[in-house]
Image 1 (cartoon, rainbow, N blue to C red):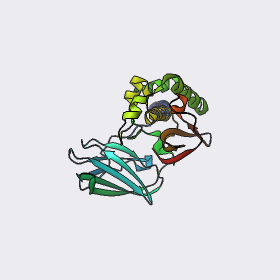
Image 2: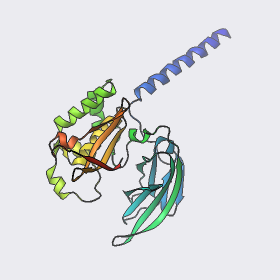
Image 3: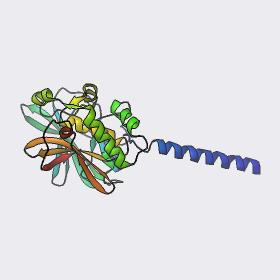
Image 4: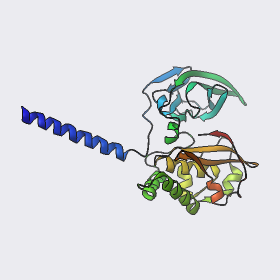
Length: 271
């Protein structure tokens, strides 16, 4: 009996060691759960609220539609509006406005520029960490474990501390990308950053470059925000990341000479 007890103890120790090793290897990147864990439905809207404490929800329509859709996420006086695909595929939306009650409403295009409400759910958020949503992908910073930028971040950053990781990614962006002036002229309202296309071409507009940088930092365990607002008189996007108790800003578009140095940044929203 004693021998059997020692065997069980040894197995438990091995399992604990294995679990710790797995946690260490998974420490950098956080990945969203498969949708369907806890779905709220109303009208044509579906919202998976299973991971609210992790700082995000997943939303989709119940059935495929060719109509234009908007998703409005409101908390108190603050409102963020997104486009939503009509393919029934869940998309990830951050709860970046912190703890509290969120109202999530689907709007469906009915005619011209007119939209009508097509479903609404509410959720009370208590985040495990105020920065938690900035460790995950979302609709604006959209990537998977197979995204090439994720693999490159792991390759060039390794086991560095956060300051060195930040500096490494900043240097990589400045040396390996250029600004896409043609896309800047032809860009349409509501166009989302495309990390894969930008990576392949090694060029993009401000949102694209900032999204890639956020992707690389987030998967290295750093809460990077894609900031959108005004850079002097230009509508613009840049990156802010918190480490060592302070916010650190980097503008990859300035780094690749897409625009000249900026005197004043004014934040409108962030993802």
